[in-house]
Length: 627
Ligand SMILES: Nc1ncnc2c1ncn2[C@@H]1O[C@H](COP(=O)(O)OP(=O)(O)OP(=O)(O)O)[C@@H](O)[C@H]1O
Image (cartoon, rainbow, N blue to C red):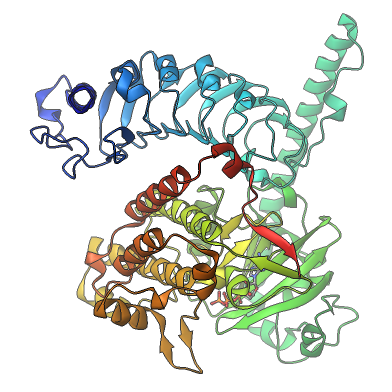
């Protein structure tokens, strides 16, 4: 079997590295002279104890050529055991992708960021064990096969293709993550997607229904009669033309108002300060603050400057990003809505605002004294908006003036990871068990790895990663929030790293500061202890490293995890990853992509340990129990 695996893998890697021009010849990622493909020399290949092939992970290796799955899946010993095939971010094309169906044990198939084209093979829907299918960022076209037949599918990502037709009738009680944005899908989104962010469905001109704001009703044909259908079509053409003209008018008006307000701002900027008004401090603290400017006494301790609100041009100053949830939002209405102060930091304050206009609760983060030129800030916000990941919270809208920046985010009902670890929510007790912690860490790592990859060139790291910036949605889906705002890192070697390197090195140090911060979050998840405890003076990273240096010990682990009987070997594995992340030298730290791969391998391991795979997928991410 080992020989068979070795031959299959050699054939695969040769087919993906032999390019026609010898100048482009790609170095082999594996040492093929090594006798044991399951040994360490074959990076990305893992086998189980019986030497059965489990994972083939060849992400981001600049592989090119035609991926022929039969090289793996027509080999009996491989087909019977392989659970993960991951070829993300290469330059691969496909030939006979349908043959993947012979790898019946696949739980993860990841082909994102390649050149695959044509239809998605029907046979993908026969892969009954799949939990994750990623075909995003390719050139796939045509309609999707009926992927709803894969009842255990937890994650499906297909953004940035040319896919069309209707979406399969997914069961969203299983499917936790989906992204089909930037395609040509049409028709209704299947029922039950209310908890999925609307951004997962954006940029499909004819998709409708919750969570998108456009309902499908008027698009459903009232009768099957041909004449009705054609008049419906005409109506639609008229309707879209109307929308187009309306959109154009709004755009022109907005540009006109912006120019006008900029002129006014220049003239008025010096006189604005004394007019600045605020949300009254006492109201804020009472937790039920009306932002209503008319009923709120102004005072000099300005919270949200409202000088501009009195100015009738402000509604054009609130820039609404791509989310359809907030179309038509007006700045002044937002400030008049009932609000509650959630927190106040060195850089500003955060308010929870119930917006009747939007029919939703949002969070407004006000940042003062961020010395970023307005144009750069706008550019940055728009750039960030183009990089969407299901576990990263994008801003819905923003406002920028010389004095302050306001950012509007969707409110996340279950608070932050910080609250989950160290506080309690009234009325609800939570078992935040080992597999939930590992799952959360992996999703966050996936999100950060994606953001780092996309924003490396732009030099935009998270900059302020911490457990209070990991938010939990209504269904406990974790989100990284406040990506790309002010740099305020926890990395103790950051200042030294930045001063000692320039250009590319400087950028790398910034991204590696996020890795340090992520390592600290892993330590918090493992130990249940606060990072920097002002009372005990504990420096978590320093403490863990010193305890571990003595000898590997369970002393560091959260007692709750030990009581629940979490697997110590896997906890130690996670601890090892965390310690790599908090290495004092930023160069020695792994990057987020490597960390995400290590965590996903741990999850795989965890999943293998459960006998009943389907029981794992149907379990909710977090275990609630009544307090
Ligand atoms: N979109 C949101 N939904 C729900 N809660 C949020 C949201 N954004 C922030 N919060 C919560 O509001 C509180 C205050 O946020 P804030 O960003 O000021 O805190 P912080 O992360 O401690 O400080 P900073 O980010 O300024 O360093 C935090 O507990 C945070 O978890």
